[in-house]
Length: 374
Image 1: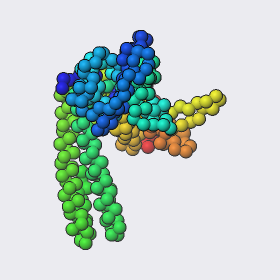
Image 2: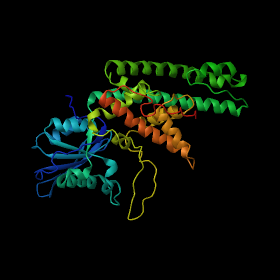
Image 3: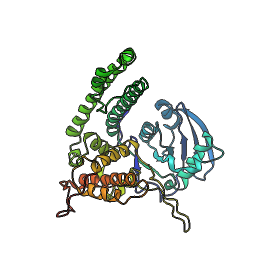
Image 4: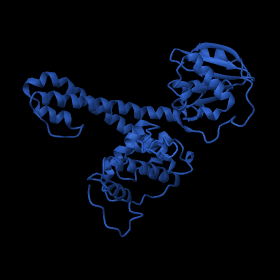
């Protein structure tokens, strides 16, 4: 399969969508993608149903079903298969619209939801105005493949964390307690203090933890190599204390192109670090953050924020601002300040990337008194 510059995981909305102000297409096809089979609905220029059916969710089946028809507008939702499917359909000469599944309440919120009906709904929305589908921009194949390195590392880190928690729980149930230590040093320290009666149960787990640590170190080296050799712009992001190669590369690959956001402040919303809105009339309730966008990137940004406002974070404008928010008191003040720092950190990282500026920790606080430690 040839590579296409618009394939990959959903990465954000298009600022302008092709076909929004054009005449309605002669053929519009909605595809409700399934793991084994995908249902489709074919509409003509007048909006009448020409054909319904299903096709196997494979490259060969798509080429057979849609390779001989004229150029048409095709709509499918974001999901596991949207990446390669959009690539195949675009190579066949079709205009492909990938809809944001989270925004299509008329589909996922319907009381009469089924695959053929969903396909028709996609086709009708695409025929009238593609903006109703909240189209997303797709990452390229290379970016998606490099993101898999970060996802693979994350799987191992999560497995290690769960295993350490399980080991600590079993030892605690036996009446022993261990001091806190890093995940890397945990297996070695645990071996020295495992209760004799627990050794046969825990020895295989500690050996597995050693192996996980080794594999995670491999991924850390790979991430550092990717960041240095293939994405040197990440060095602009690691200027900020607390932002390491993993966070910098994840941020770079998630956004992909700094020019996508004319204003850096829009990045906070993209990562789901701004409150949801549900205003109605005079009611403007305070809601939790939207948690839209990439969950992994948001988690890393929050982790960096914890370090920045924590006891070991060096003095900076961002740290002072976060500590000031936390000092206001009130319910969950510290949690809110962490989220606010994470949002402002995302804006700062995008700004550094877009401008290539040198990071100045106290750019806006020269002459001010250092903030107290958290």
